[in-house]
Length: 591
Image 1 (tube, helix red, strand yellow):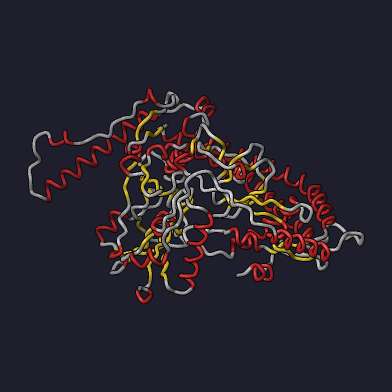
Image 2 (image 1 turned 180 degrees about the horizontal axis):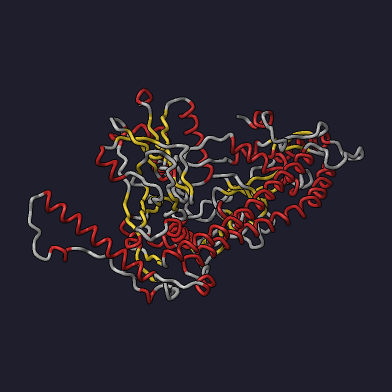
């Protein structure tokens, strides 16, 4: 959609204008400077000049530094207006410390005789959000400086812009302060939840309860009972195998039993006297799910199965459940039972090991190798084990043992089995679950109240901005220069600037790598699918490629796709989210 079409279809009210106002393209009232392609080989976390990347825009600070030479034109100072050109297209004023404008970030410098910088900062997010919603993506959504320059801004009289800004600052200052307090409270509630989980599994939550109650069976006693029962089960299974094979058990065959080792308690947090450190492998049976291969999606005995996309924090989502073929023997191995705990085996590093209890949401279900199953031993309360695993996810314990392949963190069934497990008596586990459920219920109520207040604040802010852009927040003044006359002055100024000699384009003082090949040529030579990243690399895109050159490639790609010359196939992760795109020239299009 064109900018005009986006404005015409807007239903938010944030792209509106008063009837007496005009519209003006951003390029006529502001200068847009693209960031420089600073080489990542010269980035540092300790020395150099601060470097502003897309992720830094909303924070207003950076922890990345550049150690090479640079042109002063690319220095961003406090109060400069920045826009992220990839992802969500965020905009914000830069923070206190100067930094360098990196590629895929642009700086917008309004001509303030015509357009207020603060008014532009209030107006711009609505347009960027609308453009983002109407932008298709190849790997990541991409905003060009050409599109930014084409934005048709509302143009009130210059004096009215100043009055609108003053009123907005008056109304929004208290609102924004309240929102900041709500977000701080939200963060504290999140931190309290983590502390509560930790207190539950380290014994401090039930410290007073232990003083009032005599514990007849300690965690040590429970562990010994578990070990004894595990040994008996193993012996019974071995004897069954000998009987099936008509063999006489060899001498000392019981010695082949491998008892899981105990963790070194000296290196772990001290537990209450009645507790004991053991391992996950002692507390329950651990199993990786069945591999999901394409050939298993047809056949008889089709069974619903759960995957990583179905397991959220303490919640199983069955809105999108798939089926595949299991033999009767396989179904018995991977069949889920009520109170099984499922943990994400492959996930982002922050969410790896995210656990939930299966409570029989489906009458029949198995699970795949994107999940690890934990089935508690007798005496280990599933809800208590869930609290242990939630604590490990939030505290970063699972992140420490995970391995990373292709940007996905893997928990691993064997590594998970070796993780330490704090074990109190069964009766204290029950008390922990009871107290924890009560505290978490109160916490959820508080979190819901804060979330509701934040939604109300966002709605109130949107209403205020709608009133401002519709021209009803402050009265019009007949003594103001009209928007029509202001637009005429802007156009005259534009003509004068266009008539002046073009200034030399300033770039960072370094050798710039340029795009040397077209997308079509690269795809025409390829015999198989290529990832979008690989196509751009073969076109010559590196850390040193100029933004303008990259935009040329994006424009060519859009044209090839729209002309049906190139096929684009998204590659999805287990949660159904696009990870990247694969590209291939259609056979009929080859030279």
